[in-house]
Image 1 (cartoon, rainbow, N blue to C red):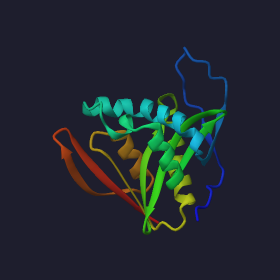
Image 2: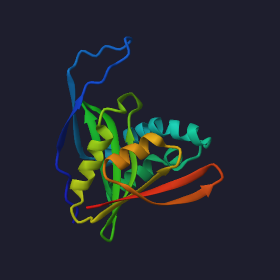
Image 3: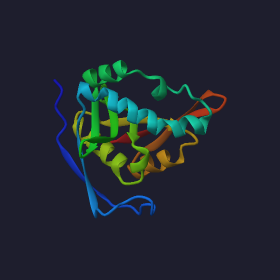
Length: 179
């Protein structure tokens, strides 16, 4: 039986904004909760926006997160654990997890491009760790050129286990966090 994720409130410190934007808030409160099937379209839109830079980095517009359908996202919401981060009515981040034995396979950690660097990704991963108390390890992967992702995962206690060359232009870095 799936346990619903506890509601988590993450206080995100205000980061310096360009002068062209108005930022009169001192901080923003982001709620992290379990995604619902009706969130699939917005999560997919967010996912595509977040993964465009990855596609450009690797010169590959056909990476999985960009070609996935809303129905596939909806299906994962129904069978796995999908958490969403919301600021007001807007979904600003999401992460997925699925238990395989006692290992949680983490995937599709995304944060809206205009909200990256504010701690939302780390908050989502921490909430995923809490939402799956039966997991003894958390496994994920990212591309070898994705320096920001690698720094985040290492900062959160993930350690590289191995690398896997999947294409001439892409080597996957596999990381694990033991509980």
